[in-house]
Image (cartoon, rainbow, N blue to C red; front, side):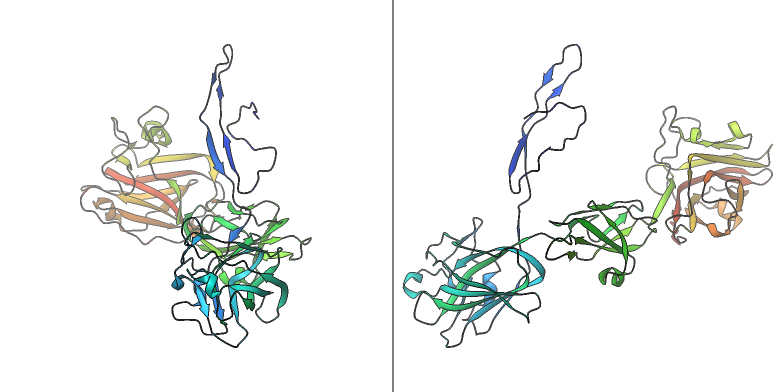
Length: 480
């Protein structure tokens, strides 16, 4: 099958089959006049399996096990090799007895699952054909709460081969039943010694809950405009998304953020530097179980929004620092942004990253020196819990004058000691935005200036950011 297209993505028309390896290639074709075909390499991928094994199973029995042969051996993979073949070592298996009690082994999962199959490796020591410790006839029951039990039915387990390459030879169809507990009661074994054992049991489930969260559970630095994604549970017709900074509200299902038809959700107005909890309940009222609540995940949003970190400027025309920060050459103040020769941005005296903005000022013939940044797209400084604007500054010996900034033309005087402009260390200037009278919903212009008649010097500016609270960090560095 082939398809010609211009796009560099392709969605198969027919649904892919679970657990199947597919091969594909892309041939690149020139346009007119030659239409040359460049044959691509053959790639492959394998789709997800239809079912998955349950992990983290707690196993118990009503009778005392033989030493070193506890019931946990039936779910911990002991004795299995990479090809799922079981050993003949008795310490890799479960064994009880002899006993006159009715023996059962019980499995408790970490939640309620929709069960597909149970795969069984019977007891498999070297002399099993003679000893007959393996289970023959059993009764299987299931429960959601461990108290109310429903009988699935009576089942016969095949006897093991007593070989070190023993592969599972019993598969029990669980028919999609919903359970957290499975109990296997022994009715008879393959011998007459009243001792009973198993090698391994594996439970396969159909994934009906949301899984595979993006961002990953516990992720940090998540963008405040991020879209949440997950792998949808099978049979889900809709997805209820619960999201809150209150973990309990998400866990108990009181923080419903919205219901969506696809396995993605874009939150509105996430706050900076905040840990959020979320879960997805997969819903399909047409199914016997109409809702499958997922586990609670978390992520922490980014600490700040970047207004300008001065990293994107180059020495090429159109992206030079003084072409974005307009200085005295155009605004008739005493400022000069950037060095007179390339590299125009400061690359040695920086607070973070690889560049900063040098702002030279000379108020000998003018009252002020200003560098003005105009934003082509207005910025909203009221969303995401933003409360403060911060910038890093560093002066030079002999500097004088007083710093200020303007937001949409509204002046904000420097809040620190005026002598800070003379300090050769990086300092942070925080501006509480609630005290600024400008319209912060549409910020189009930011100005950094130095006032004072006759003031002269250079100040370095770096990492202009928005925070949900004032940053208290001061980076001290007496030398560049």
